[in-house]
Amino acid sequence: MNDPSSAPPDVAALETLAVAQKRIREQIATVVVGQDVVVEQLMVSILAGGHCILEGVPGLAKTLLVQTLSRSLSLDFGRIQFTPDLMPADITGTDVIFEDRQSGHREFKFVKGPIFTNILLADEINRTPPKTQAALLQGMQERVVSTGGHHHALPRPFFVLATQNPIEQEGTYPLPEAQLDRFLMKIIVRYPSRDEERQILKTTTGAVPRDPQQVLSAEEVLELQALVRRVPISDTLIDYVMSLVRATRKDEGEAPDFVKKWVLWGVGPRGGQSLILAAKARAALYGRPEVSADDIQAMATAVLRHRVVLSYNAEADGQSPDSLIRRLVETTPVYDSKAVSDGRVQRVLQP
Image 1 (cartoon, rainbow, N blue to C red):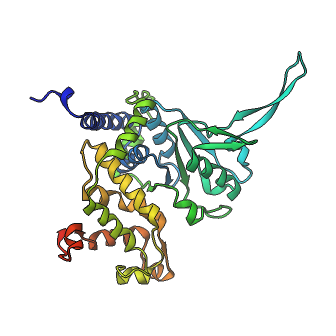
Image 2 (image 1 turned 90 degrees about the vertical axis):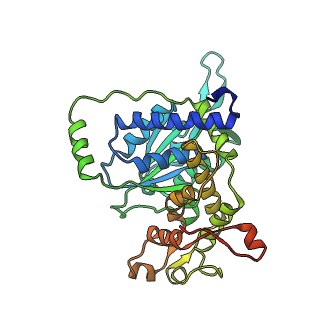
Image 3 (image 1 turned 120 degrees about the horizontal axis):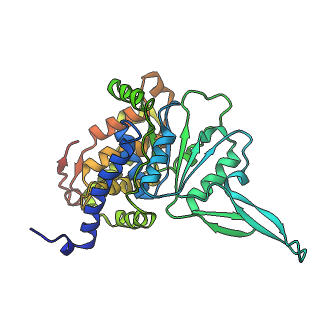
């Protein structure tokens, strides 16, 4: 039997992560019933170093799920309830004048806002005006807050989970497509099954559940995020991701007819980058040393659904971004990139 200590560092770290993800799921399951796909996508997002939009009707335990995940990862958790009167300084913080009572000396000091945390739940982000949304998005992109000519670094790791309510649209400020593109994934939280709902009703009206145990520390999460970047992906699968992304653009020659009919704007290069990172994170999450086509296909819908703008023809035909992406995954084969470059197009895998 091989000694685990003799394995290469990355392989040992992948094995540790595979064990840790099982323990994290067990801890979350003590508080939240079901939502296995959502839990997987959230863990993938954190490992990939991206941010998420979480969409679902009220009462599906979105806040509880994120809070439980943060506790199992030993990360600080913060929550902001977005409202129409929320100002940028309410999120980022502001400079305040402090006076020394003995000397009378006054100076500005920066008082940190709730964005200075590891996991931030931005609840109903579409209820606040664009100026306030932009303040959050700057921190997401640059990992710093700028005020008074000074830059204040955000804690690491830093992960934003922005929720949207799909029911009410009156009095809301939908995020523009260019800002949506900055989120790694858009995760849909669906209603529980009948058996899951029975369990929810039974467990949540009884004894208070115990707090989840800490599985990983913040330092270990940062190490795993660096590990994800080192997970290899073959040129064939990079070409596969590129084929999926380029197929969403109606003006490209490889776009199928249904894309030309249903799509106004397709996915940009950032979508391809995000899909590769998500696939790497999913492979690492299950302890696998390289990306497979299954990882790409499993992540494609969550990563690309908010980056596609459909036409009225799609609505008339009853199509959604999810159905479009599923059809692309079903019809886009994986080719051997060397065979393509040699003029010998060879299908390796048909999804």
